[in-house]
Amino acid sequence: MIPLLRNLFLKDLGLKLFSLLLAILIYCTISFVAIKNEVPSLPSLAMATDVRTFYNLPVLVVSSAADVRRFKVLPETVAVTVQGDPKTLAALDSNDIRAQVDLTGIESATDMRKRIQVSTPAGVTHIGVVPAEARVVFPKNP
Image (cartoon, rainbow, N blue to C red):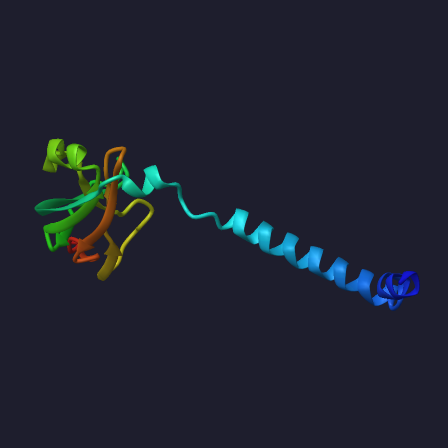
C-alpha cells in the first residue's frame, strides 16, 4: 500500500508541479481580467435615463473679438438630442443648450464646412446634432 501511495505522489513529480503552476497562472489571469472588466453594480444599472430632442436651436458663431466681419452660418438652426436623468431633462430649457461653430483663427475662406459643437449643463449628455456640420459663408470684400 505504501509503495502505491509513494508512486502516486512522487512519480512524474516535475510534470505534476508544472501542471499545478500552469493551473494557478490561468486562474490568476482569469481573475485579473474579471476584476478589470467588472460589470457595473446593480444600482448604477437601475439609474433611469431619458432622451429628449430640442428643435430649432440657433447656431452661434464664435470668433475673435478683433474680427469684425459678419459671418453667415447655414443652417441657422439645428436639432440637438440629449440624454440624462428624467428630472434633470424635465427642468432643462432650450436656453441651457448651446450649439456653436468656432471660427477663431480663420483668416479667410470662400466656402467652408465646420463641425457644430454642443455644450450642455452638468448631468446632461449630448447624443447627437442634426445636421452635424454647418456651412460658413464669409462676406465678400468690397
